[in-house]
Structures are given as C-alpha cells and as structure tokens.
Image 1 (cartoon, one colour):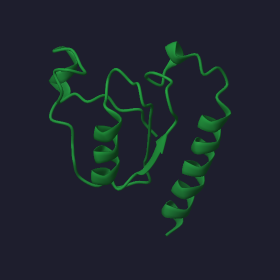
Image 2 (cartoon, one colour; image 1 turned 45 degrees about the horizontal axis):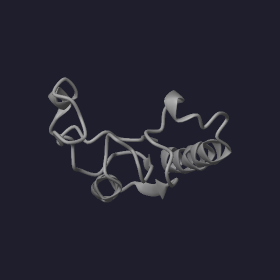
Image 3 (tube, one colour; image 1 turned 45 degrees about the vertical axis):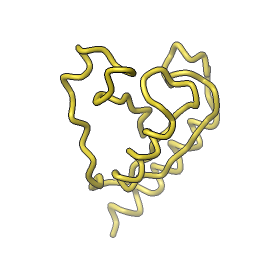
Length: 97
C-alpha cells in the first residue's frame, strides 16, 4: 500500500528523489493498493492512476489531503486502516493460492 511519488517528474520531485527513477511500470507480484490525494505535491492524481494500472493495483483517491504522511494530519485515519485490512485479506488469499 503506497502513496507514490512521481520520481520521473521534475515538476513533482527533487533531483535527490529522482535517483530512484525510472519508476517500475510492471505488474507487482503481490497484491498492491495505490492511495493518492487530489492535491499531493509529489504526484498528479492521473499519474498515480497510471501507476496503479501498470502495477495491477487497486486505486483509491482520498480527495484533497496532500501527500499521505504524518504531515497530512489524517490522525488515526480510519479509511486508511480499512484499506490496509482489505489489502491484508487480499494478500492472505493470494499466499494461500
């Protein structure tokens, strides 16, 4: 479960962060969820959707909350907890298959 940064974008990330480019654009070998915000300074919401599609991930847009981290003041963030629980269930089913 990630709130990705667009390391391929000079507009969204610093040169220090872009050392992680290029971002892999292949399906992940495990259940994945991309969670993003409409005003994340590190990734455009449409680009985050592209990541989710390329990775075979579920996509969740939580609205305008900035980058999803401690600075976004989501506090206990019930929706994030629910998304993590769902990802855990998906992961458990995948590992048994």
